[in-house]
Amino acid sequence: MKKFSAVLIAAVLALTSVAALAHSGGTDSKGCHRNHKTGDYHCH
Image 1: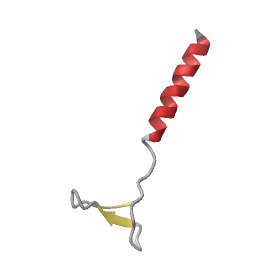
Image 2: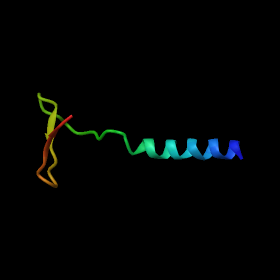
Image 3: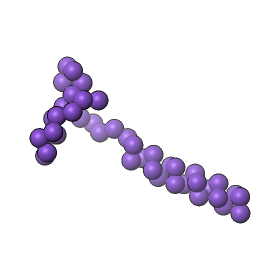
Image 4: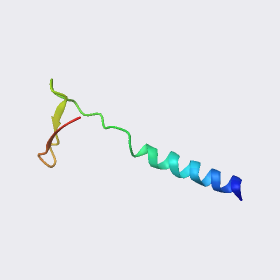
């Protein structure tokens, strides 16, 4: 049962960490960019 739990936890972590990848956005000289769909301007 411990082995199954460890595998399950590892699988959940692997799947959720994919969502944390950054997008490929072109940033300006300040490190910011505009989302053309929403009009939002934000910095990273």
